[in-house]
Image (cartoon, rainbow, N blue to C red):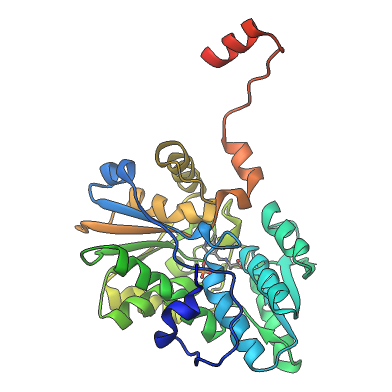
Length: 337
Ligand code: F0G
């Protein structure tokens, strides 16, 4: 499988001779979702971004950000993260043979993401503060040291992530009417809109934030954001204006969904569609089910990260295991319930 720089080089800021750091990211499935379609009264597809190499959409941006950093001679990269950016940055840095440091909110990132960042050899710094503070601090750090910042304030991140819109457009035989997407730091909604805009398509951008971390809905930063969807526990998105522009230019909306609504969508996806995403990703589906998509006939929900990232939340939401004595009658009772 070729990576997305090779696949879309003519639409990305990379020349033929530039170094490419890739793990074969992109080309993720766009899966039709019959149960969701029925509930939403529209044709609904899910873009499974959890099937990227490190289990989230961040890899699309990271192949570009790290390739550009290597091109510029960087020896190290840094990011603030609620977990997925950290995992992705760590993997691509390992691949490139450069150093990586990630700053995460202490105790607030999912277990799988922490394991990934550590396994890939990143220096993991647990900040006694939230993501917004971590981002402010790494921006200062990167401004005064020769370290490339790979958060979505980095333009290469947006360029890489816009390729998902290209893939959606290629996979469907007619244009999409609406795109449902979770919004945290607001880089991804910015990227999808850029991708569709470059194609001359204008699906409505329907962005969803967790109710306890919904600055774009409230119109003001949230000092102490809180949500079960730890990936989008963000109170002051860096791409605030770009996200608002994507919303207005596309005739879309940015709305809030509660943790209960997010978890209901999370369970529904797993139990009826066979799709296991992480809680933040389910905000897109929760938003569609709670707020609807107007008169949209063709809707795509972006499922940004894999469910295996956050086993703790899954075990808390799922049914219990059935314990069983090791004999045939007991197994029969256990299986047949
Ligand atoms: N979904 C998941 C699974 C995420 O990890 C993120 C962001 C988002 C949605 C929101 O995307 O920030 O572009 O609006 N995660 C970042 C991180 C902040 O550090 O991993 P966004």
